[in-house]
Length: 123
Image (cartoon, rainbow, N blue to C red):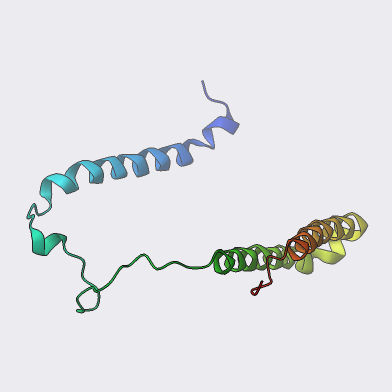
């Protein structure tokens, strides 16, 4: 017999079963019902009506990717400040200490990146 706390999970369980059943059904039916034409025209790359020319594998500097990753990292850091800014009065001193530690960890990482020269483009 289910008690009241476990019966409250029943809608979530049912929704999960329905979702997984739908995904399974789609994965089985789509290959059977979809078109099956194969050919060189079907498998060729098509980009904006322009025929491909040259090699698509252009070499980019690792610095480009490193700068992009660092941008995302510090951009995500800013996102974590929003909940603190909304609730800074109710969080009090412990919340302030947590944010100071959060910023300190990111500053340590930032100074490490600067020391390693990750943001210097010309060497």
